Length: 246
Image (tube, rainbow, N blue to C red; front, top):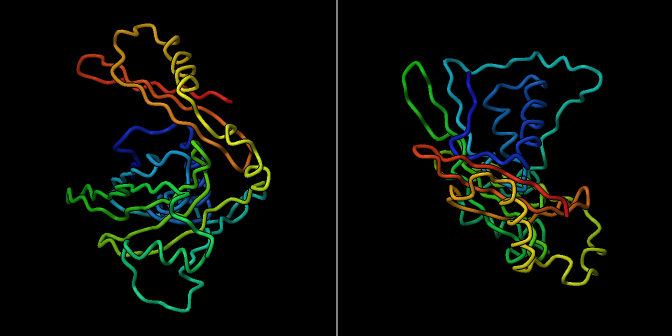
């Protein structure tokens, strides 16, 4: 079994994804279940969910006998399991379902991100299928993306399989009382961090693309800037990432 990604992979979110994935494997689940579990969490950067598993058989790697320092991993709360109605939902129903669960939910405060999702390839037959896809509603605070939100898991027919509440409790009284500028990003802010990243590139003439985003880790009350610079190196492109604390 080989697990890979079919797009670029964020070094900001990859460690958290791998922690979730490895913990689920250690609890005795199969590789496919561990991937879907890791993909069902909310991350600052969602390209970690663009996963591809190639296999000749899908099995567990552990019998679930965990060391003392690793507790059993519990699934995040699937809000569908707490609802009396067990009807089948499509992806267009999701916002109303979340609203019925959380009356304060306001989609305008969230960034909607659709991930192409999780693919499986059976190396015995060469057949590739889409196993799951994901929709994330990621909380935005001002110009910052956070690691709090809701994750929707869709099956191969785009039917809603689960809706996970991945929201994080934070000091929102403090956050809401801050001056608006605390979570605002100016053009000069963007240029400052882009220039820092550019200064680390030896062959600046090869820069093909630059991306910058800003994140706020609610759990750790930490802000940061994330810069990705793509270099054109002939037949290949080289993506270089920079992470700056703010």
